[in-house]
Image (cartoon, rainbow, N blue to C red; front, side, top):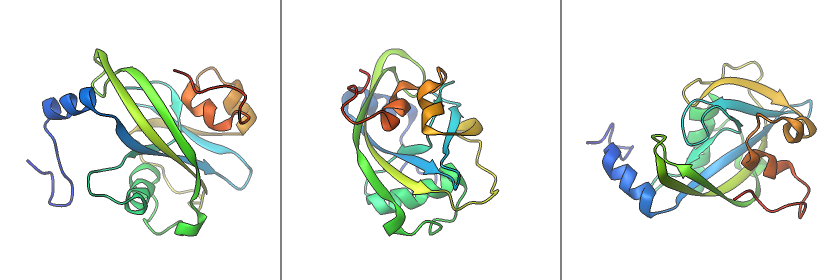
Length: 169
């Protein structure tokens, strides 16, 4: 059953089977403020539950990258879909994230993400950030991100010197 006609909806068991068989394509947002700090949220849901992570989410079937970026600006950051002009979304590369658990936190059911990372400047001023995916937020410099044990290793990979290390596996 669809939640609405614009959002395909899979029953949890069907989605569980898809995650077990296929990689998911997602977008991570490296949001920088005017002070050079980056937005991180404490993840409320698996697979990276409890870790400090950048905002982002899956690309939906039939959704173009720019459409997904605009939707994620709204869902993850509470911004109007056109708050950031397309030319200000800087592509930073393709990453892969591998987890031993799935979206339901079930061990032994791994998840594989192919992640498109985009950087953008925070245009939101003091806008309230949504709490659906992250229970708390904070702004950290790149150096603080790399030094903080609570920041997920996959997020640290975005800030590491190129070639300094491979992504965690």
